Amino acid sequence: MTETKLSVPDMSCAHCEAAVEGSLNALSGIESSNADFETGVVEVRYDEDRVTPETLGDAIRSADYTVKAWAKA
Image (cartoon, rainbow, N blue to C red):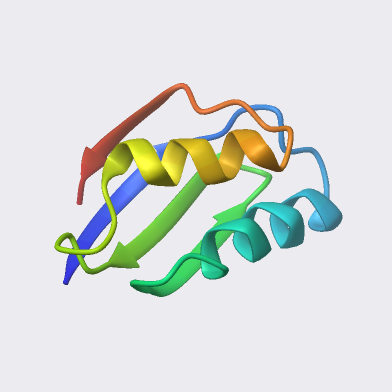
């Protein structure tokens, strides 16, 4: 499993966290996701053989949020 942190600065409430987590958790290969609107960071644990960083970004953008950066944790 791979862990990464994503900067999602436009989350502003618990509903935003749930929307981002729901979009990520719908992907096959996601073990866990934890969004924190106060810090604007989403931590994701995933199978890198099934999910790419680009796929993570696409999932977040499909929930109408912006991804600024990501880095392996």
